[in-house]
Every structure is written in structure tokens, then in C-alpha cells.
Image 1 (cartoon, rainbow, N blue to C red):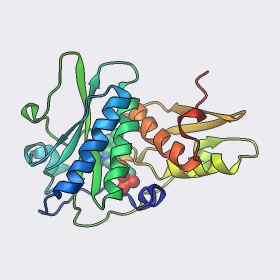
Image 2 (image 1 turned 90 degrees about the vertical axis):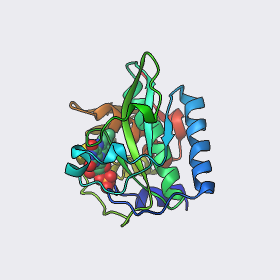
Image 3 (image 1 turned 90 degrees about the horizontal axis):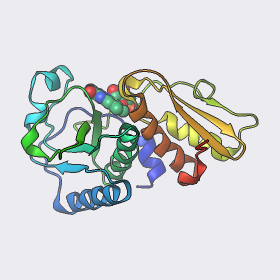
Length: 222
Ligand SMILES: Cc1cc2nc3c(=O)[nH]c(=O)nc-3n(C[C@H](O)[C@H](O)[C@H](O)COP(=O)(O)O)c2cc1C
């Protein structure tokens, strides 16, 4: 599956079947995790066959069932940790979607199981991403419009493509509190106020890069 199609067909899935992820797909997920860690310096870990994080009250409250595999998004505490976890976590989400798997970002409705992954001194677990075979493919979220999340005079096609891709991105409670402004041939990306908005921004920036075809060179760093 092409990555653009993966962005269009990905929706949060909270109920999973018993089917284990086959070895070849697990190997691809592990390889992508390793590549993300190498590029970013993060310490993301793929946890398999671990039901406890999603068996407590919080997971039940969050309507999760059958989750036994997840990515634990871990990295050194730093100002940009949340955004980095968002960016690289979404790269893993889209990889999983391309492999025919389903996912759900989870920052709140899960339990921490310290024995399942390593959080070294100075590191922090920011969120997890459930992964597996969904009972359904999920449903599209309600979305803000282009004008609500972007500012540009005579927006070129690549900018429109980037914003449209960002609008497909998952955000915490579907808040979509990000804003993209065209500045010359670069883009300023800003997070709104509130909880998890920096992680959401990292996720949306990954989608923008893919949708615009411009990769990381597109950002206006000021
Ligand atoms: C950073 C982040 C944290 C999230 N945390 C939770 C969570 O704790 N529990 C939950 O059920 N969904 C969680 N979600 C999933 C969102 O509710 C979901 O992505 C959003 O409603 C948009 O729907 P979609 O993913 O189907 O496009 C989270 C999403 C993101 C991006």
C-alpha cells in the first residue's frame, strides 16, 4: 500500500482480534523502529504479547480490547521530546497501516507496565501506540477545514497537499490544534495551547512532509 493511501485509510482502532502479528511483519516493524531510533536518538520499543497495559480500568474505560502489542515511545527528557515522539511514532503508524495492520495512539487510557520495556535514567515514556489486527478498520474523524489550520496567499499545490495530509492525521481527542503558515517557500508549523499539542504537531508535520512531497527541508526554523 502506498503511503498516501495509508494516510487516507488509517483510523484509530481500539478493538483487536486474537490473530498474532506474523513474524515477517514483526520483523519489518522492528526494522522501522530501529531506523527511527537511529535517526532520532529516541528509544522506541516494540512490545509484543503483553496484555497488561490494556487490561486495567483505564483501557476498559477507553473501550480497548484485545491489545497485546504496542510501541512504547520513550526518549531522553528534552524540550523537543514530545514533538519527536509524535513525528517518529506516526512514521511507525503509517508503516503498520501499509503492512495491513491497525493502530491507535494512546497517551492516557493505558497502564504503565515497567517490566515490558526499558526506561533508562533521564528518559521518559511519552505515550504508546497499540498495533495489531483490528476487528474493524475504524471510521474517519470529523475534520477542521484548510482555512482553520493554514494561512497562505495563493497557496501552491504542494502546500495544499501538505495541509490536506495533516488534516488526516490523528490528534489527541481529535483537537487538530496545529497551524501551518506559508513563509516564502518555507512553512512555519505551530502547536496550539493545551495538552499533547506538541505530540500532535510532530504527527501532523510527518503527514505534511509526506503530503507536500517536500520532506524535512520545508520547515521554517526562524
Ligand atoms: C497524542 C495522542 C494521544 C491519544 N490518546 C488517546 C487515549 O489516551 N485514548 C484513546 O482512546 N485515544 C487516544 N488517541 C486517539 C484519538 O482520539 C484519535 O486519534 C482522534 O480521535 C482522531 O481519530 P482517528 O485517529 O481515527 O483519525 C490519541 C491520539 C493522539 C494523537
